[in-house]
Image: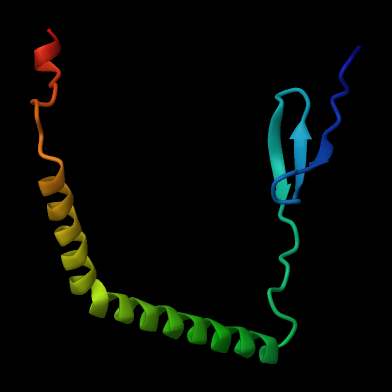
Length: 102
């Protein structure tokens, strides 16, 4: 099965561009990038997407602020619960350490 010395083109599976390959050296000698796709059809769609992103960002910020306001109360309740649990079940024996197993 003989290889021809003619260059051939292959489409890149990742980006969709065309690769020109030299069969003798087995290397890419040229690359033609794929045409870029438009994200939005017109400026109205782009503006709407930006407004939606702003609204989402504001909503997430408001949720974060609310969580920070309640953070002290939540942490205090968790600490009280942990102290209560520790008092109810005191340690009767020392926990094993890696050093004790030798």
